[in-house]
Amino acid sequence: MSLELAGVSYKYSPDTPYERLALKNINLKIMPGEFVGIIGHTGSGKSTLVQHLNGLLTPTEGRIFIDGVDIGGKTPEAKGTRRKVGMVFQYPEHQLFAETVYADVAFGPRNAGADEAEVEARVRYGMCFAGLNYEEFKDRSPFTLSGGQMRRAAIAGVIALQPPYLILDEPTAGLDPRGRDEILAGIRRLYRESRLTVVLVSHNMAEVVRMAKRIIVMHGGGILFDGPPGAVFAQDQQLLEQAGIRLPAISRLMRVLAGKGKPVKPNVLTVDEAVKEILPWARGR
Image (cartoon, rainbow, N blue to C red):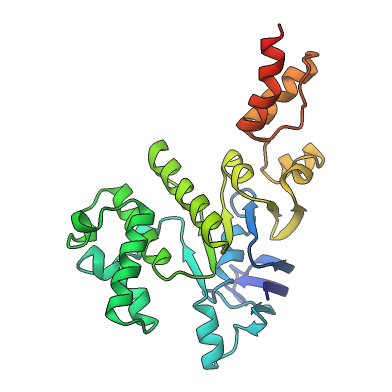
């Protein structure tokens, strides 16, 4: 079972003067339990790609399969299969619409046919995950919340669906450092405990390499690189820069230290790895 794109291409505004090819013959398979990061500069096709994964966009060419089911069909099976993919948009607070936070978070589970006891349990779970106190926020209008709280309420609504596939398109954009760290910690915890499949779109290289086990680099509507973080960032730096990709800051620091003859590995990608490299050298000076 998997999430698969077969020969997917997509055109915006086809047959008009504004026609633009946003995706070019994408062939991609994401297996259950994977944590995949998608990176690339603005306009590379990242968001267009992930919006195909739950049927928000329909390919101009090609097909999309979730657990072997073609989600482009109009059958009840295709419709039900699309619900397996939960999507957190770049600004998910724009998805809010209900009179209370509870009603907003409960909409998905209710629409999926859950009974009220199950709905309440899922609302509590989603709000807890997103860092919103249930008793404090359940009866409040989502439109009276702060920007960060609105973001959390929208994320809670997606998590309440308990989807086996979770797509996150820049979920921390606009959050302060504390809010960003809390959301990312929650995503890591959810992935570790439930082993769901996660696809994370982000411009933050440190964020991606700390969480993803596989990285896809998008460029010009196609896949430029696809592999483990170490293998991707070991690719030709000029090609990566053309795709709008820079090494994480800690990696650039380690390369500088190695270039100055310090006994550290230059191909370090995370702060934790850097600490393990630097401490023995620093203590031995």
